[in-house]
Amino acid sequence: MGRSTTITMVKKRLVNGETCAKCLEVQAFLEDRGLWSRIDEVVWADESDPESAGWRLAHAHNVALAPFFVMTDADGGTRVFTSVLRLVNTLIAEPAGEVAGASEPPADDPASVVRWALERWGADCTIAFSGAEDVVLVDLAAKTGLPFTVFSLDTGRLFPETLALLDSVRERYGVTIDVVFPNTAAVEALVGNKGTMSMRIDGHHECCGIRKVEPLARALATKRAWMTGLRPDQSPATRGDLPLVETDPKHKTPDGTPLIKVNPLVRWTSSDVWHYLREHDVPTNPLHLHGYRSIGCAPCTRPVSPGQHEREGRWWWEEATHRECGLHLK
Image 1 (cartoon, rainbow, N blue to C red):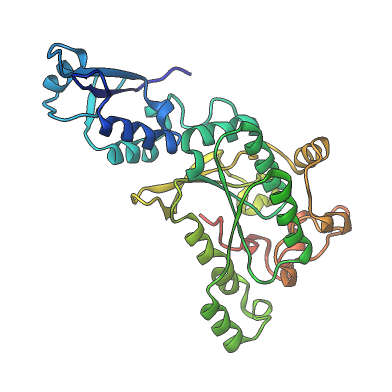
Image 2: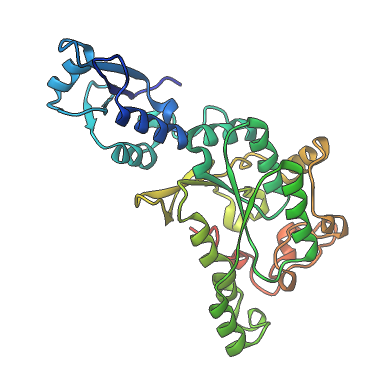
């Protein structure tokens, strides 16, 4: 697909031929966030040449400082940004079709989606890690050679095998996994008031809210995008309309815009995931060999029988439409 919007950056070149320090800082800022590739053209405002292209743009848009950015739409309309933060907010908040020609990656195979996300956001795009699908994403991300981060939520009730998988992934890929824990006081209050198995009595959402949802908000607080291993066939009742790329209004970037949520495996099935895991010898949780297909906290996970859907092993005492912990509810 062609681009419908172009972005021009105006840099200032000093009399001695050097680039102004502020222009270099702004370029580095965009590169660190994986957004430099979104700049289509650089023009120079030469201190020694008042007729240079950059100065002409500055006069045309009544701008007296550099760097600045001119965003030109397909119909010729322009927007001028003298603040790089406002430009970044626009690039993230607007549908990508207005900026880069498509609201989604140019291809929907997981490797292309992962590369697209990391080229766009770099280390500001983090991978949510807990199980088999997420190791696929880590493997694909590592193969790009691009910066990325990984986090995991340790609820305090994970299987030992799950904790061992985290260490295996750390060792295999040489990545740091940021482990986020629940608020101790909130856990103590829940257990003190309702005991250790309250989820069997009044539902799992309160416990998950404390052990997962609130820690997730902290994990994402400094990010601009996150990648998940969600697939529609994991839970047709709650994930059947899962998009490839979506805004996540529940979580905000440091600039206050909605976080972007990327689901690279949205076109895959469980069979596709396991074919990849075996073909690439990716670390997996040994509990999968014992009938555990969807693995969460130990008190809320059990193995399933052949022919049963994987989600039947999670919160089996509740209705199928309730079997979400709250991390991915709309």
